[in-house]
Image 1 (cartoon, rainbow, N blue to C red):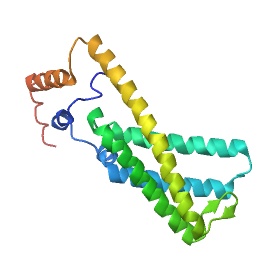
Image 2: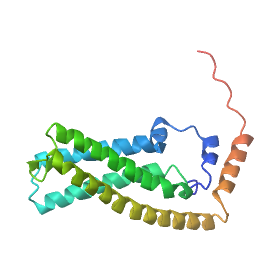
Image 3: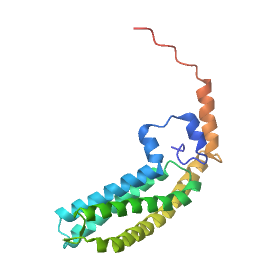
Length: 190
């Protein structure tokens, strides 16, 4: 359990070869792009198939969108140490909002973007873009701070439980254990 939350990212590269999904989740532009496109298409779908007059409908839609955004951010940040989060979280917010804003412009240009129950015009785009950026920053930055506090507390609890001072000790122990194991014999030819 304590193998999570590394202090030095380089230690993980020596132990495991990342899968395609892990490489994707480590890429800031790719995660922000996919999140932005997904959230804007989700919003377009919900507004065209729901009842925006219903408070319950709007509330549940906003909660689902916020959860998706924060899950994608968490998946991305989990690949890095806390020392990298201070610039990765705001950059994720900016790239994700930028992607959503460009998707909004494209959907507005083809007449699929809605504001409430009516179609959005190009004059609605700039105020909407400003609002998207502001909401992303106001949602992502406090969440990242809260997540960093939780990760720090969990890391300290796990390290004190194992009576060690850093994750590097655990990685060194894993390397020694791997080096001591004899290599597996080759498989017989078929």
